[in-house]
Image (cartoon, rainbow, N blue to C red; front, side, top):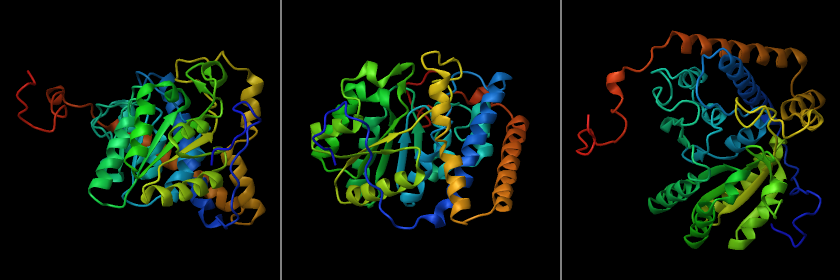
Length: 344
C-alpha cells in the first residue's frame, strides 16, 4: 500500500511472501529465454531490413510479463502499449506468427496489417499493442467494465510505460476504475525512460505507484527484475480485482536497448546499462535454479537448444510466408462487411 514516505525517498519494494514458487522456475526460464532470443533475433533482422518501420524491443523486461502470466488464469484479458512482441508470445501465441507479423506477412497474428506496434491475438485474450501513449488505458477500463457487466469473473490487466502516467486519459481511466469498482490491474512497466526522458526529468513524483493514492487505489512498487516478486504481487492484485478493488502495480525494470531500434540511447551511460545487466532477470533465475537444484546444467542447455530451434523455425516460417494480397486492404477495417462509409 502507499506509505507516507516522501516521493524522493530511496526506492523500496513490497515484501515478498515465502511460498515456494520453484515449480514455476523451469516455465519462467524457458519463457523469458524465448522472449530474449526472439527480441535479439528481431534486432538482427531489423538491421538486415527484413523488419521495417518502428520496432520497440522488450529486452531486459522479460520478468514482468512472465510473472504476470503465471499469476492469472484463462479468460483474463491483456492490453498493452507498442512494446508488445513479448506479451502475446508469453500468453501462448506462436513465435512463428509473431515473427511473421514483424515481417508484415499474411500469416502474422494480425495478418500482416499491424506490424511491430499493433499485434492482437484474441485466441489468447491479448487485445493489442497500441501506438498512442496512454491511449489504450481507457480501453483497458472499458474491457474490465465489459467483464463486470457480463459477470464473467475475469479481469483485465492493463500495461503501460512510465511515460503514459503524464497523459490525462490515464488519470481519467484510474478515476473511472475506482468509481465503478472494476476488475482491473494497472501495471506500470517503469524502465526509467519515456523514450529518452528519465522519470526524474518528467515527473515530480518519481515513485510512480504513489499516484494511485490520488484515487484511493491500492498500489505497490516492486522489483520488476524479479519474476517471483511480480508473480506474487499480481496474485494479490488479482484476488482484489475480482472483488472490485483495482490495483496499481509499478514494476521497476530496465530495457537494455534504446526506446526503439532507431534510438542510440545517448541519454544514458554504458556504466548504467552494465549495472542493470548485472541484475539480469534470466541470469538471476538460472542461478537460483542451480542453487535450489531445480535443474542442472544439462537441463538448462536442453532448454537453450529448444529455444534456439524455435527462433530458427519462426524466421523460416516468416521468410516462407506471403505478403497480404493488396485487394484485402479494406477487409479488416470494420467488422461490418458492407460498412456504407468505407469508399473503395
